[in-house]
Amino acid sequence: MALDEIAFRPRVLRDVARVNAAVELFGRSLRLPVMLAPVGALEIFDPEGAASVARGTGRFGAAHMLSSVSEPGLEKVAEAAPDALRIFQLYVRGDDAFVEDYVSRAIASRYTAFCLTVDTAHYSRRERDIAKRYVRESRLRSTGGEHQKALSWRTVKLIKDKFKIPLIIKGIATTEDAVIALDHGVDGIYVSNHGGRQLDHGRGAMHVLPEVAQAVKGRAKIIVDGGFCRGSDIVKALASGADLVGIGRLQCWALAAAGEAGIERMLELLEDEVIRTLGLLGVTSFAELDGSYLHPATATNAPSVFSAFPLVDIEPYRY
Ligand SMILES: Cc1cc2nc3c(=O)[nH]c(=O)nc-3n(C[C@H](O)[C@H](O)[C@H](O)COP(=O)(O)O)c2cc1C
Image 1 (tube, helix red, strand yellow):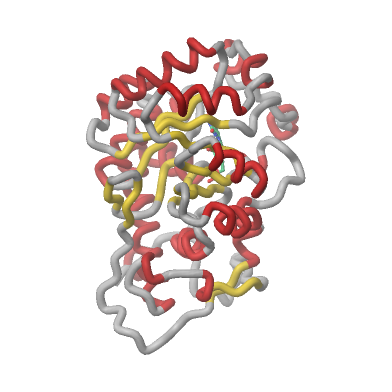
Image 2 (cartoon, rainbow, N blue to C red):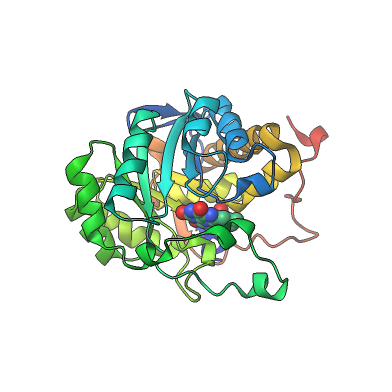
């Protein structure tokens, strides 16, 4: 995995008695540079679906991106977590009026930003699902796929021209498209290969991130996702130029394990790991971090009997 091909270059003998993992995003303060990535059909994992995720995330103080194909929908999730940093993500399954309706509703429900996912022009052939005879119920009801296929920069321009809400494009995988997005005034570039669930043989998002960060040069916020499971992974992303890390599948496991409380606990564990990693690198905040703390290498984290990091959180070891 791309994340495992990066090792740390820690600095020592610096006062790291106080470490703070907080960051700022779109004028809001976040306790951790983490966003719960958009996941469709969260109601599979918890009866209250995305509302549980938004509540747990809001209580902790991280960001939440709601998928347009997750229940209970845009307005109800806003009511569940009115004060959270909420972003709405749309799959375009209708004409311009469809898009404009969603943007207007997101603004009315005080979402901080709006996101278009653009790496799903064609739905991939998901062979694990085929082998398991798994068909998501919502996909049987899904219509409007032709609009997603025909999507172009014209819709990005339409939203930027008509609305003031910050716009994020999710699924950027090249410098070329990052530059076109910047030319359109896009506020957030979301580097993602959809967790490898769309185009097979794409590059890992952590391989793409450095070139995008170099092209963006602070002109837009950069979000990245793909396999982030540990605080050390999050630190690697921010040192590579990301502003925010999306958490997809880990969110599903936390939600399935313990609902809203599971989401909050997942974020607490990530925060604990981030603070220890920053301290061990010799920095007290993300502002002090840059690429000099990373080294391309094979820093495998495969489980090993010699490892000091078992894969479970063992309570007596917390200190
Ligand atoms: C079950 C599932 C549903 C997803 N649904 C959406 C979605 O509705 N919209 C979207 O933009 N991305 C969706 N994604 C992609 C995630 O937002 C994310 O890009 C991807 O899972 C990589 O992050 P991860 O490795 O932390 O899971 C989904 C991913 C999963 C696993």
